[in-house]
Image (cartoon, rainbow, N blue to C red; front, side, top):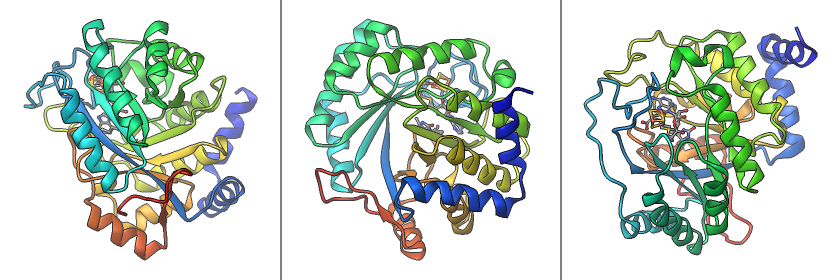
Length: 320
Ligand code: SAM
Ligand code: DTB
Ligand code: SF4
């Protein structure tokens, strides 16, 4: 086993109390332990995706009964973004069910970035694979973050997706980085992978030329009609170990407790925050799946004494 790999595996598999203590110690050296960054998601183009990701309700190849929509109009997106800002989100993330953006859609996408940026929120997009020119144009419009997940280990990748390769994903991440956009890259746990796959995924992320500034860890939300609809539920402690290991391997990155919070107890979420998660999606919808509503998150934050992180330029935080 290479050096790095043994280190990551040793971190992941150590007794849970030691792992949590180490992760929390690293976390406190880099972040305020009681502040959580809040992002809001919007699906700007839903369903009908040509890719075959086995977990996804939006793949046209899966049997989910989701109908495909067209790209949302810019003004509608901006109206939604304004509502999110009023509710206190500091980052607005827009997602499209594309393999990659088509030229005819670029003007609208760029206008969405400019409009959201003008409201004083950070902007994030996830549009599939990008070429170098597209990445530069997104950057020019003011894009702060690009989300592009590697999803799992290189070994397990082809069990989950066959219409693109792990290397394709890495190449887009390199183009995003080269364009000067912050990278948001993570993955999904609970897809039938092994602990070694989860460790390997984290090592790939930590080993990128620059580690991603934001690392979303999603817990699979089983979607009806997809090949992973009936996959056995992952032991929640494995999710906690994944977050803690991400925190230790990428000490200065935001680690996002991403999809799946609606299925987690407050105690489980508290353990994930203690393990070093310091970002969440707020609002009752992710892209197509559910998320805890604002009142529920406000109560959770109050119970745990957590605060929504504010952008330096403003004094507002998320409703949670
Ligand atoms: N089409 C673009 C792409 O794949 O990069 C952007 C949207 S895609 C839905 C964004 C990410 O959401 C995926 O990479 C995956 O990690 C996550 N995701 C999708 N469906 C999920 C599910 N059912 N459970 C957990 N995470 C999911
Ligand atoms: C990420 O890692 N998780 C978000 C965001 N990036 C785009 C998406 C989660 C999707 C959950 C399933 C759904 O809403 O369809
Ligand atoms: Fe398409 Fe993205 Fe869903 Fe894969 S994860 S099917 S690329 S929307």
